[in-house]
Figure (tube, rainbow, N blue to C red):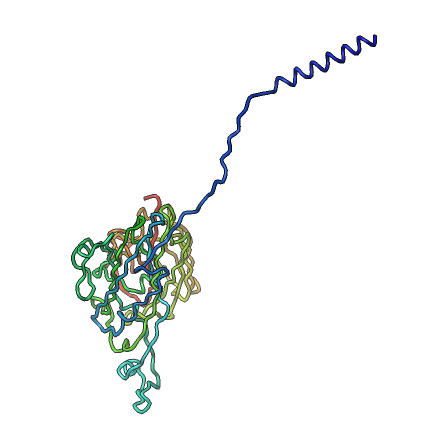
Length: 377
């Protein structure tokens, strides 16, 4: 019996070996070593400066009504960079009286102290030069001197100049403060020449104020910022933006304290999602509208929302499907931006999307133009 048990044990061991052998296989291993992931580069230079710290104060000094001053710079996408989208905006940082002269003092209802050469008394300052600066901008891609010529003042003349904002659109500098404006694409090593003009003038038409002695010696300070983004990036406009809406004196175009509001909105999407909150209003029905120049604002214009103010306050929340980008291409302000107004509905015709009366002392106007990308169109 003992021999049989041993024999069975040996058979069990052999069986185990045979079963284990059925899992064997041929193999070969190859290894790639030292792999490195390297992030790409986005880098631009402006007038061969990196960083760009130039100032245009010398070119813009001693402005007078009807004067136009041009400034110019060239952006280059570096050789080791990726293709880019290029954006630009202006940010107004300060407006002040600067040097007060006797004519300015008189216009501000002050009293000129001849001995001290100062303005005293009930002087009321005005320092909103940005509302009286008409702005335009042109670009020339991969410029050669003979293809992007300017005259002695710096104004684009002949060549491949492309208008971004033209002077006959009457875009004010305060309308585009902090609004990103798209300049186009640049592949590595290519350049883009940018020319901007600043024209101190009165607007055409009986409704527009003039630049008078109140502006003597005034100072406007602003920054110019450029941003390069990779081609598939959404751009610097961001997911949400806010717009201050203010009352303005229809004679001087200065802000007044009678009523104000803030509009929060998405800068891109299939619908324009808005949240408006206003205070200091009359207890009447108001219309929140897209006013598309020229008058009466139906180019094409739109009624975004309406509601009745109670206790001098108004709240409007919802979404609106424009079916096009803001500004619309037919808008005189395109491509700089769109005007958003809050007006009494008695002054607005929803059928024709146009103004039918003009009582600006009861309106809230946009502090800046806005841009909206309708992603469904």
